[in-house]
Amino acid sequence: MKEPAWARFARQRLALSRWHCEPDALPAAQKAAFEAACLRQQRLESAVVEAAGGENIPDAVRSAIAASLAPQLDEGQFSAADRQAVIRHHALMEMQLTRIAASAPQPDDIQVRAWYQQHQAQFMRPEQRLTSHLLVTVDNDGETVRRQVARFHQEIVRARTAFSHLAQRYSHCPSALEGGRLGWISRGLLYPQLEQALFALNENDVSAPIETALGWHLVWCEHIREPAPMAENEALAKAREHLYALNQQQWQRRWLATLINEASA
Image 1: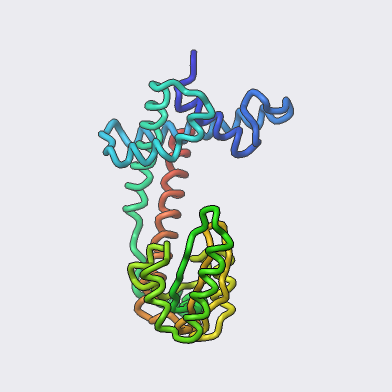
Image 2: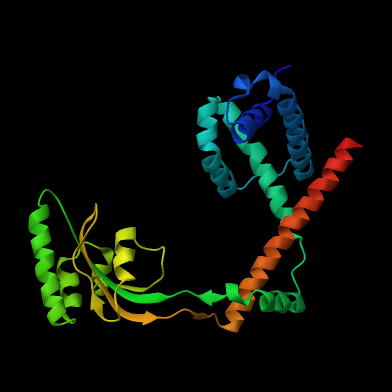
């Protein structure tokens, strides 16, 4: 009897994720282990979907699942009907696991504070820089743009107040509407070349013109906010979120273990 679409999809995804090949390309020595793992996976998925029941699936959930599975479904060349069956199967699993996670207990205040006190080093606000940015894009006129941005740089070096005026008039960055102001910037938010230049500046310094694939840039480090401990109420809120997420994961694992035991009995 032909496997249902969701079971064939599970086989393909397991082979690709763990053995890095299609099921038909598995080495003979690995086939027994693959079949055993595949049987466990299919039993588990089937049990989760059975526990979910035949409820209606909200359009938002169906769309999110369809988007996340689309690349793998495309690789497997599933028919339109098969795709919908796989999407429904995974949407039901997602909804059931979300329901189980939502029943996990919230950490109490004592747990949250104890965890926070043991991990205070994790609750540091990173170094931030109040940043303004000017960008002039290049369209077969790179040298002209370079000279133009060099002139802007000279004007800004003479008077920082020129930055806002020049950004509003000439910058192709959306921040031009705010006079080039990007706000407080931490590492990891800008293109590498811009970040490197920005975090090498002293307070109130303006970078030399920077070339990227987008064009020519200037960045102004208006102020520097050094790393500092996060406010305690903010840190405790983040600690609570972290502990609750751990509780949800543990709650799901326990429920799945119970489900597996019941299915095997």
